[in-house]
Every structure is written in C-alpha cells, then in structure tokens.
Image (cartoon, rainbow, N blue to C red):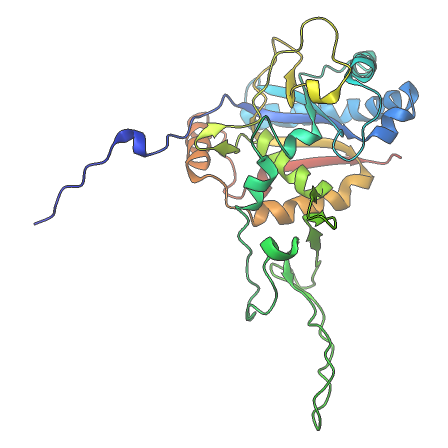
Length: 320
C-alpha cells in the first residue's frame, strides 16, 4: 500500500511568468569612453546600427510569419567606470538615436546585472554554473566556483618537473569539448578579487547575465528579476544609483524580455560575446522558466532552440 503524501501548496515555490516579445533587439552596449567622445561618436554608432536593425526586424517578421513583437534596449556601463550623470547622458543618447530614426524602448545599467535592488544577481547566476567535464578528464583542475575561470574544454596540463629517472611529460594542447575537427579553446575569467576579497565581475559574465535577463530567464525564489520600472518623473537623476536597473522609456513598447535576442555591436565586442556563449552553455537555468517559455513559444508557432545560447544572435559592424 502506498502512503499518500500531503504538502502545503505554499511550500512549493511558484515560478512567475513574464510578458514576452518575439525579439529583444539591442541597439548598443557602449562604455563611458564612447560617451566621453561626445555626440559625434554616438551619431556614428547609430548610423552604423540603423540598417542592421531593419534587417533584424525583417528576419524576425519572416520567422514569426506576422508582425512580430519587438522591443529595443540599450545598455550603459556604469559598473566599471562612472562618467557624467544620467541627467546629462540619457537625453543625449535618446536625441542621437532619434536623429537616426531609432527608438530605445528600454534603458539598462550594467551594474544592475551585478546587483538589482537587494538581489545579488551575478552571484545567483554564478551559483548555477555547472561545468561540462571534458571527455577523459579526471577532475584534476579546481572548479570555476573556486578559481573564477570557466573553459569550454580541457586546458593544457601544467608542466611539472620530472621525477628522478622519469622523462618530463610531453606538452599537450588544450582541447575544445565540442570541437569540429579543430579546437577553438577559450578560458573565461568570471571575476577577480582584490586583496580584501572584494569581487569584481568580468564584462563577459555580466554580459551573460544581461542575455539571461533579456530572455526572461532570471528568477529569485520564483519571482522575475530585472523587471522594467517607469522613467523617473521630471528630469533624469544626477546619480547613476538613483536610476533603476531597467527603465521603460516607451510606454507603448512591446515587452522587454523575448524568446530570442539580437545585439548590434561594434566588432570589438566579438571576443566578449564568444565568452558569453561559453558561460550560457554551462549555466543551469531555472527549469520552470524554460518550460514556460518553450510552451508559450510553441503555441505561437515560433518554437525556441533547446540551447539557451542558440537563442542569442548578433550583428557585428566595423567600428571603433
């Protein structure tokens, strides 16, 4: 006889769903030196971005078979450096986008990918990293949670002094786990720590968090993270910390999160985004959120790839 097991329904966390667009289209991910270069630099950026935005919209429409829901976003680096203020930079950014015929629906701060409100988002994502052991490995390297480094394969073994009467071990190359004939090995630094143990998250890791946010896959005890706030009343604040992590600038915008993402970026971001894929491929995402999105996208006739990394796409343009 099988005994019945009773549970309080409140004991099982409920994963809250989020509104979803078909595509989250990133119009830029610039750093303070780009803003410091003045309006001309932003003007050049949006002039390069415009044609690719039109192409990404057309591709999304072809995939959806109808008018797709598309939201645009822009990420400002206020994590590694602080320059000027939202009150000065945000109006400049919006004016130059408008000059190019582009509208930014959502504005995000990169520091929000580290901590949003009181939630240490980056730390929570780091705790979900599950390293893929390369074939034939014996666990002889420390885990990423200890070292802060994550690889997409097997590193070269460390050369050691040979014991007496034994030859030195021959050099061996690193090996990509999913190599196609030849390896493209990558070792990603997730964070660094100072002498006092204070952690600074790396640009690739924060960019991976950013992608998870745009895909609607970030949860804390079932509650969605990185949800948009309305813009502040009146002028933008003088301090970056007073600006929400994610601001909805366009009241008519489609949802921030989406089934897929596309980012239009200068080609100097290519190495960073390669590292983002390595992180996403080895991050265990909330299974309930994944299931919700898979079911909803299938009902709409636009199923998403099983791999989270394969839901992310890019356009890289030649630029400074």
